[in-house]
Image (cartoon, rainbow, N blue to C red; front, side, top):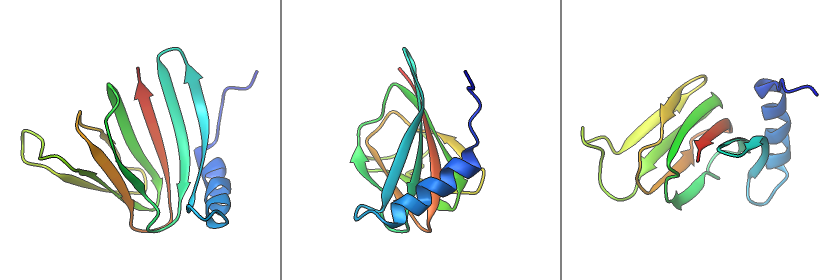
Length: 114
C-alpha cells in the first residue's frame, strides 16, 4: 500500500474539478483513521466555507493561493479574529465558530484530531 500523497499534484487536480462545480469546491479525504482526518480541498476564489463549529483540534494549511480564516463569535484571548494565509502557511484553528474565505483560487489542507 502506498501511503504517500502529493499535495501539489492532487491539489491542482481538485482545483480543476472545483472550477467545473457550481459550488466552486472539490475535496478528497487523504487520511481517514480512528482519531484523525486530513482533507485536501480545491476552492475557487469566493467559494470558501460557511461558518461552522470547530472540531476538538484542527489545523488549516494553505497549500497554494490566498485564504482568510475568520471567527464569527468574538475573538481569541489575544484579540485576533482573522488570519490571512498564503502558499505554505499553516495555523491552528481556534475552538470557536469560524469560516474560510478564498481570496484567490486555493488549495487547502484541513487536518482534524478527534
